[in-house]
Image (cartoon, rainbow, N blue to C red; front, side, top):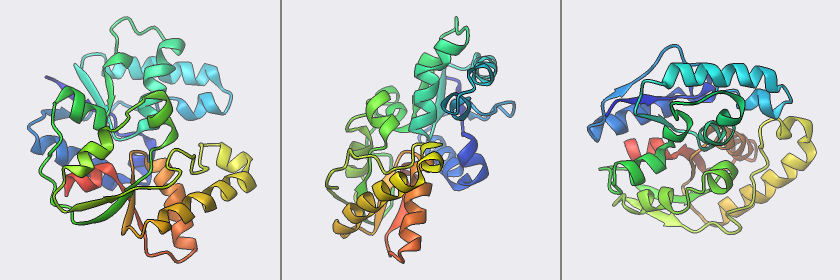
Length: 231
């Protein structure tokens, strides 16, 4: 099986450790992974900001770049959701590239059929299900199934887990006061768990949450699912 890593803009520019962790994890599981250097933004930001023509151009590029691969894996629920839901609306995808694009936890559980990935992570975690992974991809229990299979992880329940953290891409910029209020609620729930760290499948939401935690001097860390599983 030829598998490509779709690393996403945010991992490339701000969270390179997430991309590296994804590679380590998949290679440890015997996946022959390639990184197409011609990949660019999938166009999610542009579509959200009201530029469908630019988003369509990027969607066509995505299809062209990843067309030859049997599977495309991304450590981002939001970008994977954009590709699966919106790329077919924006570009001709006769080869079904969008349908072959997987968020990391989906790929591990559904395509590889694994739950125990050999992680050595130790500590208490709470899991925040990000909006795109929850509502568009419907990944369900897959991330938590993977976390529960890590012997050193104590997974603590998060109250009101399905509530948005307030990021929402450009929403956090255009509606900063509302976004900040939503974030405060999420941080309070995270801290109430007493967990060492909060885990999610999206670096974008983690960036938002991590910033809030650091500003309030919280000891809670924000970690990506790939980083936990690659440990």
